[in-house]
Length: 266
Image 1 (cartoon, helix red, strand yellow):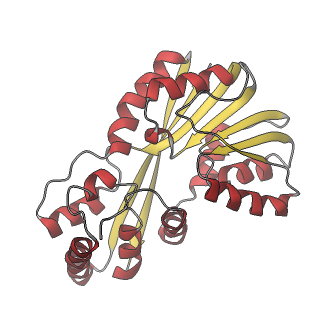
Image 2: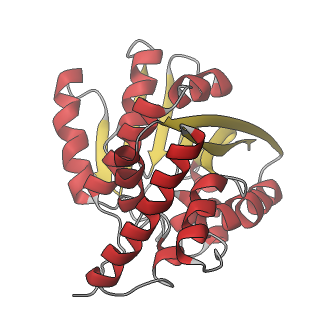
């Protein structure tokens, strides 16, 4: 049976859960401190997933903001809408494919975010131009994504297990270069903020859960290694053997997530 490399809600939520459980820093707190939102503004979150950032903004601003969350996944939007009931449905969630023209008018939003999603865009300049268009003059865009040095230990373990070279990852290879350059070309001012979060694993199981949940995030890596589920399971066993060996000799595995936050002003 062939492997489907498309993102699933389950995989995304598993990775988020492992970041929360095994990381030493809170990325949501870092983001809020970096962007310093003011009450009474209109916010658009593009690629909102299950609404995590939208609810974070709402809490931070004590419900004093108009927030719209958009995503291409109906499954994730349904989860966001279900969670939204706990907030008296104060956030508006709707479908949006950021590879197509946005449904919003020019100069609509004071603040816009796109967290861990922009590098999935088919045409980076088009998508970022749309983001720029719907922002008010002086409005700000905040994006997050993996930097080139992200998860170095993770890829080192896979290389050791498979004896195969690691290709450039589509997220980090695009984010730190093409995406940043495009943002700089369209916006009047751009700041680069770096967040590092070491994830510490003292046993193999959570590391392997993370590995299995990275099928879509690292699809360029995986689809060069196997195409069938049988091949996939063989490689997972090879990776787990390396993880067990390292844990036995080193006592723990520390995998550092390195995230870039680009804060741009129109």
